[in-house]
Amino acid sequence: MPSVRRLLAVQAHLETTAATAEPAAATTELADLTLDDFMAMDKDRALLGKTFDTPTRREQAALRKQWIEERVTNILPGLMDEVGVEYWVLSMKEYGEDTAWRAMTPSETVAARRRSCIVYRRTAGGVEKETFVAKSDPALGWEGLFEEQIKPHLEEGGGRIAINVDAVFAFADGMHAGEKEAFVRGVGPEVMERVVSERLLPIYFLMLRAPTMNATPELPTVHGSALPTGSGHHYTNAVELSHSIIVEAMSAAVITPGSTTCADVSWWIWEKAVSLGFDCWFQPSFGVQRAGAEGTLADDTVIERGDFLWTDFGIDYAGLHTDMQHMGYVLHIGEIGPPAGLLQGLAVTNRMQDMILEEMQLGRTGNEVLASFKSRMEGEGIDGTMYSHPIGDHGHAAGPLVGLADLDNQPVPVRGDVGVLRAEMWYAVELCARSYVEEWGQTVLFRQEENGILTETGNHFALYRQEGFHLVV
Image (tube, rainbow, N blue to C red; front, side, top):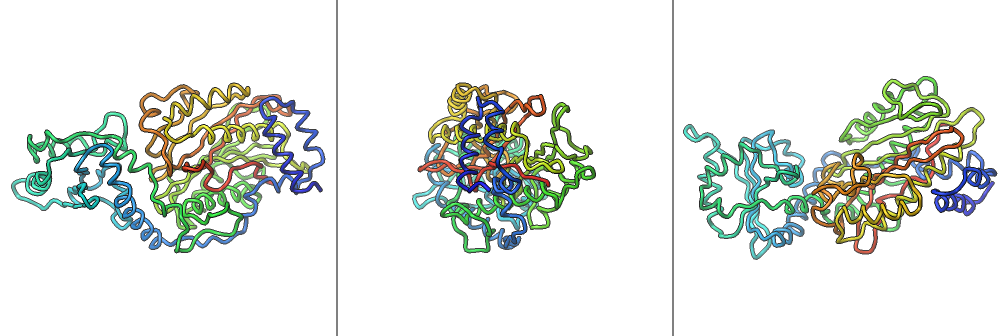
């Protein structure tokens, strides 16, 4: 049996020659591997059967309160100085909450009450927060809140007042049209002369992480696998938990070839997440590609031996979101591993991941990152598409986009140039490659997505990336 060093050498060979190697070369490198060797390439197999000591709802709520306080205390003052505002006003009605509201509100508060107005004021000592809730007024209704409470508060200062109104970004457009009309009437023309829209204030507030969101927690954490040095972090925990659900979904414990459908696995993934105390933020996608079939088959398609599996899935962990795409393969009876052409395609996506993490340099816009990545990818002869996005408080979160799937590596208007990449941003590194699989006689789509963290000292995945197929034996 080849040693671990030999397995690593094979993986390195596949990635190095991913764009140009002949399938025969890959086959030669893989000829002496066994089923156990192919399984060893899948790091997530170590998570099968592991017990996860996950935070309870109450503990998750405590975490969220801590993170809100840290962001308001340590991040918001600098952002308000950066855009030059004294006040930041978020006004909303029940069930019509501002897009940024959840990131600054404890879990126990499910919705805004009546008409609610949160006002942050920049002071010499930091940021002061005032929350105003409308009282029922027979004459003015809830609109009296602005004239009677908000206006006097804003008149205490003389600086600019930011509200969340923007034609492009949902994250900066949280004040509904009717709410703005009532606000304008209530605070009057003199106050309105100081009112501005500063899209980078809510966008940066949402995209920058509080340090303890990915620092060693005091509460129970997910454990039981080999994690990177210094890990045990909340977001790493969330990603590891997501990996564990995927590897089980793509195993014989869930899939019975010839019987299980793609829809069966999709719903199993969601129900598994809920059973662990978390929720999915979108319906998990699950599909297959197979020899002789065009595109991805899903829904009521029965999974068969020889199918190439794919899933797209993410959870909400105490308000932190994951988003990932993994690949698997259903072995034929007597088959010891995936076809060499599929392994080669996986290696192509790994090479693309290397390049994009290197190009996501702090201070660049999303479009600048995309342009340098595209140049390198094309220089290596890779047929791929990049569409990475920020992740955190939302699945598709605030911040610069690095491509969009339907733009096929073309610059993203406006949203690719809003702000720049900063340390402690998190990204869903999402991409695909099109690679010819000789054993099937057709081009196959390979999709990968892993959650990464940008830092001052370099970029890395929150856990690790997929380098071996999840196998259904």
